Length: 64
Image (cartoon, rainbow, N blue to C red; front, top):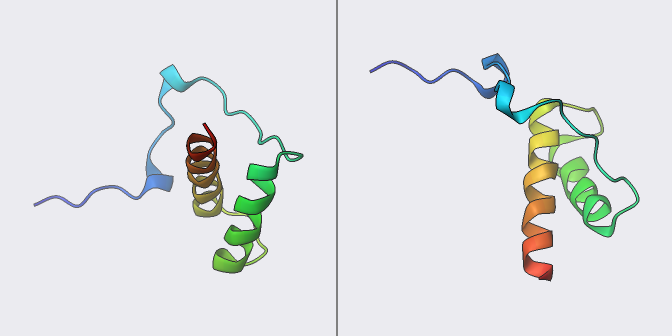
């Protein structure tokens, strides 16, 4: 069975358009960033950004 490509090796789908930056003033971002910093360290990485974006989506869905 063929192995899946790691997420950083895949090209960004064209239908998604350009990536948007996080709203760094929001409560959801600040709490997600705090957790990500503990988990991944202070350096910025793709995995850390993916973790933050998923965490923000979870927090926003719980809020509604």
